[in-house]
Image (cartoon, rainbow, N blue to C red; front, side):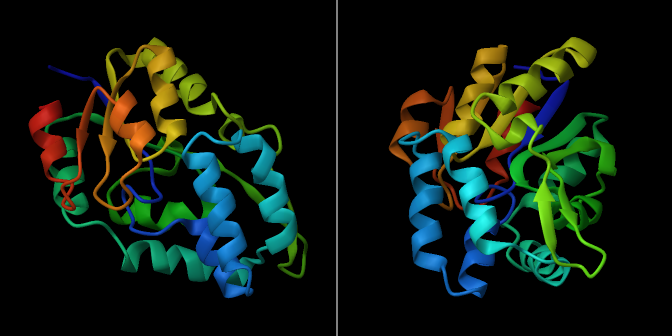
Length: 213
């Protein structure tokens, strides 16, 4: 099977962490936030039902976003650098599509050779003193079905697309006609195992190359 565009989720796919949970843990709310995140990723509650609630409780400032950006890189999943290097060398169009916070993901994308315009995530706004103001409430990626919207747009521009991810929101890419590779190497979710076109629990992401090249 040949694909023009290969898209990756970030949290628990390119990096071993869930960014919002790490931010919560940093301010002493870790356990409660992890339950909310898990409920959304398992499809038990809509993403939009927990998105604003999580951020309004955590209120991440610029310093915590920089800290998270470093953590994404420190906790990179095995094989990710090699996968991106191989795909880009073959001239594939690679994107990151994430419900995470864009400013925290951009340094990881830069490390992997992706330009900022190929990172689709939720922008966050700060006050002049660096404190949290708001997130982009218009972003499709802060609600269910958002990844399908982004995939549909990319497919209209470029052609066949594959989405690689670990959660229920990644499975929604199928609504746009995308082929979905489920990744259970960090978190093994039953709903992803059931709905993905192909599923792997290999902890190293190198298996993706066999599926897309």
